[in-house]
Length: 379
Image 1: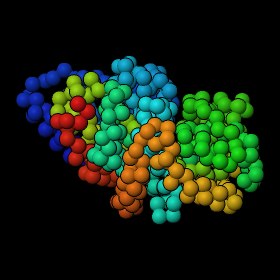
Image 2 (image 1 turned 135 degrees about the vertical axis):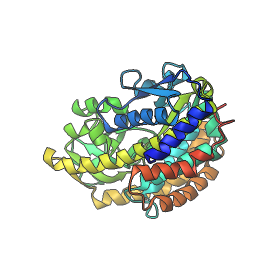
Image 3 (image 1 turned 60 degrees about the vertical axis):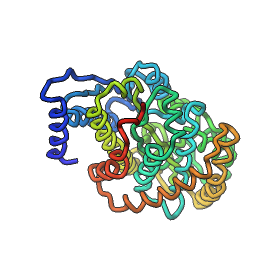
Image 4 (image 1 turned 180 degrees about the vertical axis):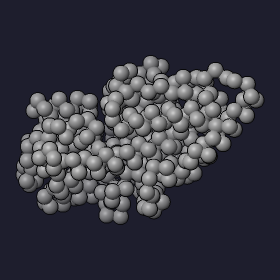
């Protein structure tokens, strides 16, 4: 959003206060990314946007890895230790079955009609629209955690980042692969590997000490979490899918804000979703460019491995709804899969010519965030 429009919104917020200076509410944002990473810089930009859009009525202080880790974030925001976070719901399968089921449909981006470098910004739009405007069960489970959903961002697609070489499907047998969630664990088991549950904050040490042979991680975390310093091989094309990171706010904190402050938070959150998704694309590009200087083989996976992966996805995409029905008694899986598939088609078209985060933020605001009924949302 350009600065003149930001100023107009900020001015409107001040007028709504009747010219009376209000004491700013300072919110804490517990970030799980390292302090000097670009995702953390994106959170700092979010803080600046909140202050500007709210005319100073709300400020945000970012705590990168110093308040709560990703593994601690859900309980921390639920219990009021922090006001906001990037909530890695895949770490909490029992608490967020609906959101995690939807996130697993990110495997669809590997299909030919949706694939491409910008698939993550299309999936970000699709899942955010569905959750914010069309998924009562999603809203209920977030509310049950004493939180309110303020959008999300998807990472780039997952690749194998390894300390050992992989030359064929047979080489996957017995390899210990860090799996960030249910999709990647199923994939590892299907190819004969051993899935290892490990938070992203623990993965660098796991690779360095030989606890895992590979991590299934997105191309930006290759840089953000230092994997570039320990791995020797990166294989693109498998296992695929993307990690979706919802942004959540403590429910009492949200409901303690004025309507104008809520609108400012929504506007800033639309930009946060755009900026974070775009940063992952940029970081993925930069990581690949830096790999040769580290003597890292950053290549497309062997063709038999890529074909194996496509075959797995073709079968798995039809199994997700059944898996979540059996494990969590979710009966809307088939309907949700159809909705996400349709929305992914819509958002693939909407985002195909997007050239930057500012343009993307406007798109998310116009198509999703501006349509939220602030009078009832999160109450």
